[in-house]
Length: 267
Image 1 (spheres, rainbow, N blue to C red):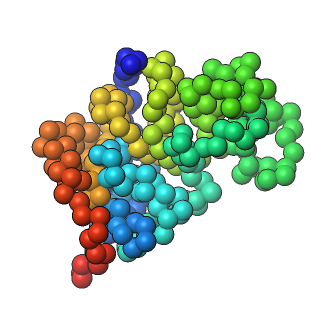
Image 2: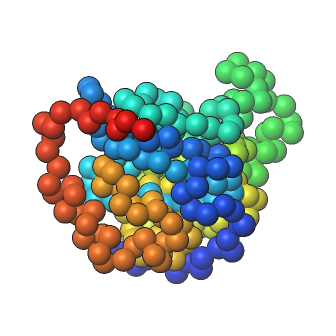
Image 3: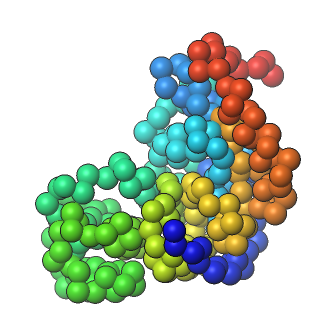
């Protein structure tokens, strides 16, 4: 087992109070998300402010990845709604490693270049300026010399570096990361956290699903604790207390997978 990297918390960008829907870049209006009419996230209200750095945590089965899919528009709400202040094309999304097909015969260079699709379209050419941008993104994640390697030959950490380079080129206002530091070494985690903090300093909005609570405490100023329902949302030090974590675990353990769909309460 690798040791956890030492991470300093970023300087916090001024923003509205945690969970406020007013002036949020992502707003949740009593939203319920799920599959086949079975909710995975119940009655979430609040908002993620522009420029904030937020971790989403909770036990397995808490609905964390489901929430990101709802934000991306891949999953339509069963009830309520999700409001965005930006176009979905201006949201960058990094799925879980298990959702990425690494058998596809594509090079690191071509994978990173896909981050330019908003500028070039699917079949647009890549001129000298964009080639330089690709090279700079590859260098920024420490993969210079790997450009012609196929992604199937990369280690887990190298693959995450390549995916973060693609995110750099997307130049998105909102960045969603689903378990970005799972099963990678401590040095890679530290380097990628530095990139996350760089985005935060640029006042981009970053939302990450994470399991390592120690890393969350060190690196993320705001946290949403989910257990299919919101348990706590706000400053990380206040959210990740023992009582909240115990409550979240008990809520998941008591969940009835055959429960009927929960209708929205009347106003």
